[in-house]
Image (cartoon, rainbow, N blue to C red; front, side, top):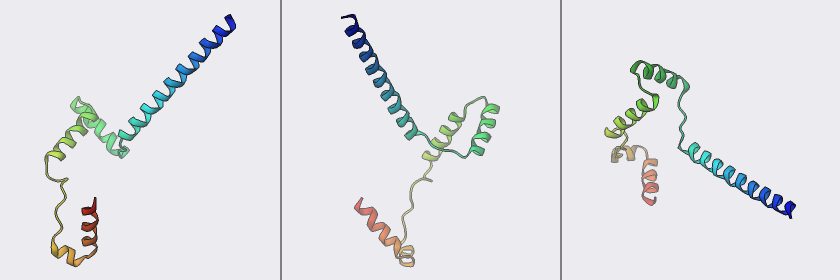
Length: 100
């Protein structure tokens, strides 16, 4: 009977380890999807600037992103008819985008 109890406890422990491992690995995949790669030289420069300004690289990057999104820089400019006539592939690109 004691042997059955030990086996039961061992099986429960293995199940808990397996569940924890799956949870941790799924969190790692989610975090990897949210990560972006930056040029290491830029990161080094941002670290130096952040140290001088007593802030973090994350705060600087978030501020830059907020500025970019507040501007209209990211919005696509419409393609003119003249541009489409000069490059007929732009018509095709427009047709493909309409289907999405």
